[in-house]
Length: 74
Image 1 (cartoon, rainbow, N blue to C red):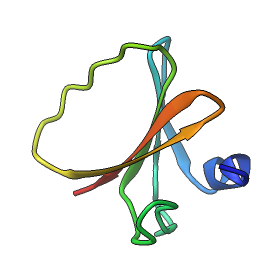
Image 2: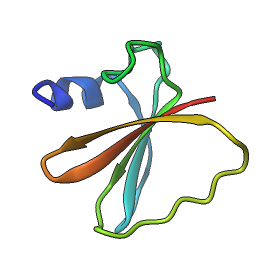
Image 3: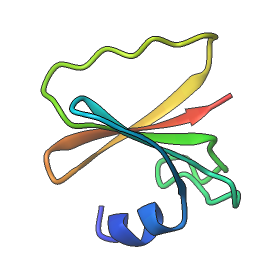
Image 4: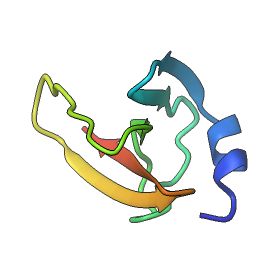
């Protein structure tokens, strides 16, 4: 993803730990995968990472710099 840093700078940071970094989309930025606004972006920092989801949601994915990036749609 060529404009990943620009995308990330448009989002609100929420969590950053060894496994993930998450950002909230508070400005209705379009998902680079489906072009619809997304709720959160999650960057998986480790090869194996599990997510505990509270409810069912749609996910779009991409790879940036060898890391999986998830875009959640509630």
